Length: 256
Image 1 (cartoon, rainbow, N blue to C red):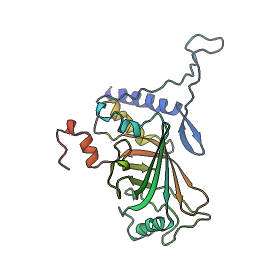
Image 2 (spheres, rainbow, N blue to C red):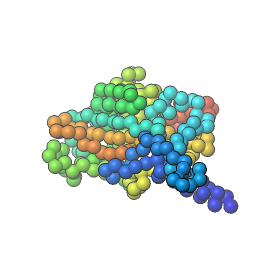
Image 3 (cartoon, rainbow, N blue to C red):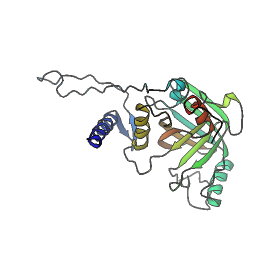
Image 4 (cartoon, rainbow, N blue to C red):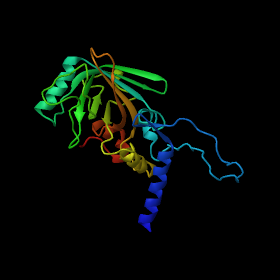
């Protein structure tokens, strides 16, 4: 009975996510329209109800995240992230991957974050690759440097560290320093991981990372236009900042 109950809840939440999304160029984008519904022609009230009901994102045990994590990682909006990077720094990222596919080395870049009518610009931020078995080269084959024409772009995971090179408050986004950006590998529905994080937080599991969607562009200096990497997952980094934000629940923040 317990397994059946969980399965029913899971299916209802998946259905809600499916109804509230539309497909755009093979990427899932939230539908911001709220069409009227509630009556079918000739039917009784409630029949064939097509109303899309807004989802309540007031998670339990989350007062400590107000104005910070819940502003950045907001499932009701679609932030835009634009990365500007020089050819030398991009080629350094490619060369570092060729040297060590598991590299955690950062390169320099500029980041623009747009959401809810606000635009935040961060000069000289850090960018690196992420992932375990899903790590990929973001462009071309081993040994190849950036090609401004007919570029072979590839989805991969990134980490943006806004304070990597500039240690000041101006390089924080609502008190958030890092953004873990993941492409939806093996997830054509674009919801699997974010659905799980959302489910945990709805049940008051405060150790679950904050997460949401975003749209990602990367522009290498000299290219005619930025490469649109599409809709990405945006996930809270698990680091010392993660622990400090939850220190009251953990009881301390001075440990690993």
